[in-house]
Length: 219
Image (cartoon, rainbow, N blue to C red; front, top):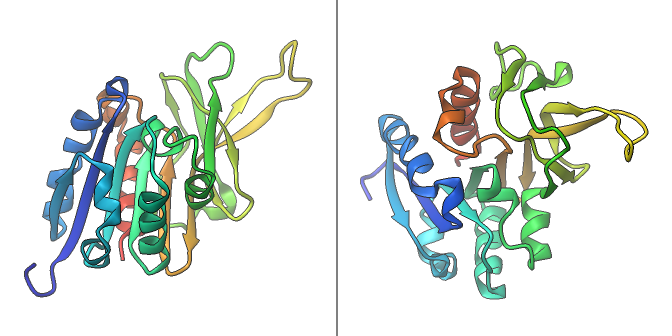
């Protein structure tokens, strides 16, 4: 690795319905323009490579579903605790490895379902975190794809939410975390639940906050 150059690793695979190759390909040139050497991996065994992860400043994961072994999860968690950043979007980060509670604790959230009537939804940015570098200067915006109903760790800094209306099951509206950041040990974690496919990233605010999230998470 060139002296002074940061390294990013894109780990992609799992269910093809979330377009892991197409969506991550959108951000590789961006990372390269910001001085990253980008590695692409299509297997989870890379999370067992302690030396490689120690040299990696940012992991961008897009891997919906699947299973992660205890050794793979432990390697990823140890890397983040030591300072490697982790970032991802939609199912590629919060609908991955449902059998691993340790992984879910690392990411700070877990997809449960999509709300009824998953039409257009307004994404509301947090006034409490308006100065956060991921969303600073942006305004609320609409998305046309399904929002995620997620469980969320209270240690998250929630940067954006969507409101799910009351219905015959839910007696009152609920504000569901949509974008958040967190720290885990020395590492930073960025999660956006927006990003079902390439079309989502044509929304300027989505593209901008995702790009900023990648940079924020990196060591």
